[in-house]
Length: 168
Image (cartoon, rainbow, N blue to C red; front, top):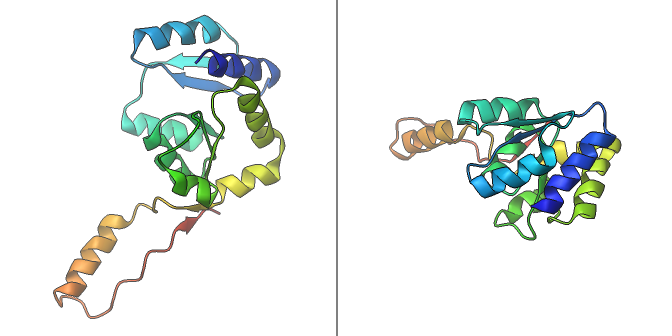
């Protein structure tokens, strides 16, 4: 965790037009480490954990996402946000394969290098932000209803097959 927080601190110092928002972890030990490196710094906002709606609003307004959360690895691509995974492996390899996320680990230099690339290299950013979202497009409920209706003969037209969404 120390390497992660040092990297965020140093990136915030370098990029004067970037704000880092960190929803604080509920674990007091993690909070203490975050506060040690990030509290009182310019362009770093330490906020309380977010509910789902607030989280989605923040994600939608963000430029990119740094996370170790599997759920966030699935959610952020829905908003067209590149995900840098702060772990050495992921249980969500489909995001990596699709190009929406990249496993970068917790090493300071890897974090700094990967964040800098996405801030400075628009082509690299666009490749990730516009990659096909392997986790869906928010229309699963509608498709399920259509499939059930078709199966039971309540509609004659067969529902379209799902094709992962490409962000524009």
